[in-house]
Image (cartoon, rainbow, N blue to C red):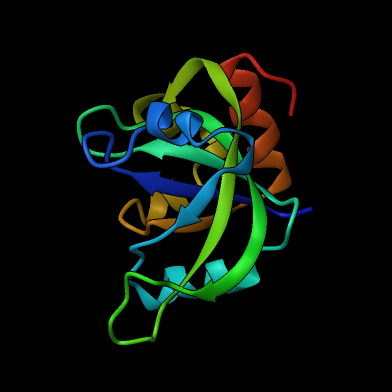
Length: 139
């Protein structure tokens, strides 16, 4: 199983909005970056991703699971981009802020630290375990 991080602006689609979709979840649409597109194409059913609130909060607030692999994004008129389906798994008991992540030397190589603008990004197993622990979850 691979690990990822997906970013959303909480005023557009928040963790609470994701949870409201229930056990079925829904599509992760709207990604318009070719690097992020490659990551969406690499996602497999069962992979997990950190749900990251960007903008003001800048924190990992939950974990989602991929329930359907990449397919054409229905919101993309150009037909160049894809989406995956995800469902909420669990909230972070304590949101893990970008400030906290940047303060942890073991996370200095994390894509979120090096390229914080990328909306879908890989997370190593070690990074996953550490961020989970920082948020009060077992990895």
